[in-house]
Amino acid sequence: MKKIAILLALSAALSAPAWAATETVTLSIPGMTCGACPITVRTALKRVPGVEKVGIDEAQKLVTVTYNDSKTNVQALTRATKDAGYPSSIKQRERDHG
Image 1 (cartoon, rainbow, N blue to C red):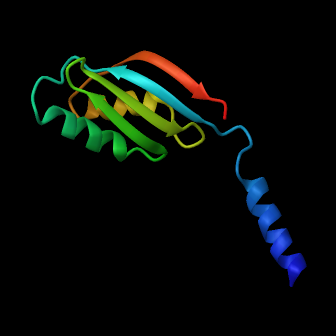
Image 2: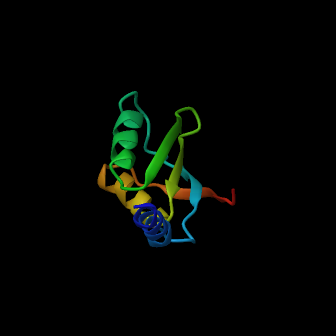
């Protein structure tokens, strides 16, 4: 029975991509001009598989998104904001090496 548990654990560990990492990108969204805009943008981004956190700075019109890079990418994030009516561009990008 222990061998089966070990094999299952090993199988699960090997099936996850070793290169997956958490990345953070800051998007500039100049079209966020009203109180409802950040809610719409946050909702659109949270629907993208792999998005872990969305932080919004309304005053600067910036959105910081933390995501799993094995599940999504920046292009999917900018497409999500554009599809919601808020085109965005990359302001800053960083990778979590931890």
